[in-house]
Image 1 (cartoon, helix red, strand yellow):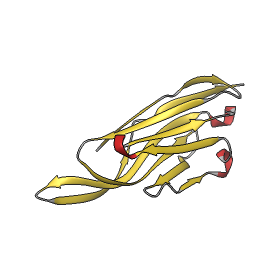
Image 2: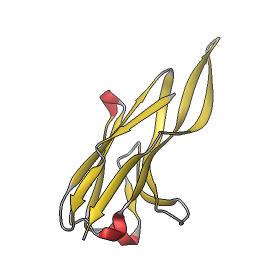
Image 3: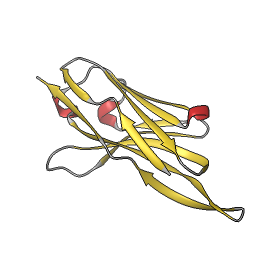
Image 4: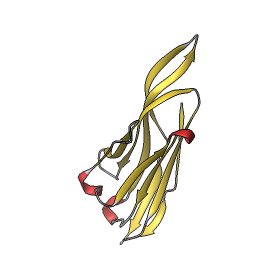
Length: 123
């Protein structure tokens, strides 16, 4: 399973960005999709997650500003980020928990990561 994240960039405080994450490969099923971020000198933290029932959860720091959604037909997750703040500056990583088809009618559960996309919010 491969994840391709895109949509990062430079934006001013108060601006918006929309991140996309496309999952491809031998996907059998996706349980949940999420976004994490890692700022310089800090640990990676969970930002938002959405499961197969479209139940979402968010970090307290982004509640009311970020919205996660998914398009199951396209195996794609989105993160709409509004009212961005300088403290949102980080590399954002896409994460998928799901099942991969490995042949002989078998599947394997996995936790997959994308390559990251940089979001920079200027003050």
